[in-house]
Amino acid sequence: MITFDKLKLVSAIENITIININAFDKKERNGRVQSLSFHQEYPYLLRIKIDYIENEFVLEFTGKVLGSDYPRLISLDTIKQCFENINNLGICQINAEAMMNSQVVTCDVTKDIECYDISRLSAYIRGHIRSYQLFNCKERCGNVTIERNVLTRKFKKRMIIYNK
Image (cartoon, rainbow, N blue to C red; front, side):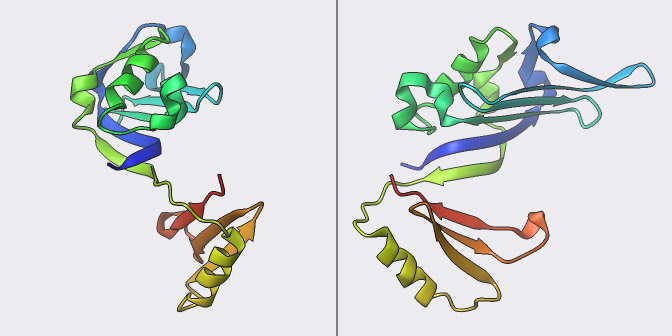
């Protein structure tokens, strides 16, 4: 089963109902509301943006929204629980069923793999990179990062191996 630690979903604006408008930052132009946004970092990352111009709803959150079920991470088995926990904040109501058809625009895929020597793994990866101009591999704080060398964020790709 594929699990995620972070998801960013885009859906139709009808799939969210605002309950507490005061929890959102409002952007206006010429007296018209352009967008509403909500952002929190603790106890988990949660970003909600309602864009009235694009007629879309963007939802980004981390697996910590699952609370004590966090070790299960975000998956098909836990995604509706994520939506329920966000709904329990009392700021909005997300249509969980409709969100199952939303577009995934960003995700942090998670897979646990046993590795007994992270430095050796890092050295192996560095030794097997075909082009140092395209990718680099760094080991920092016990984690290994492999990333594409580009300036434009749109083309950036990165994989991080965490030493848990």
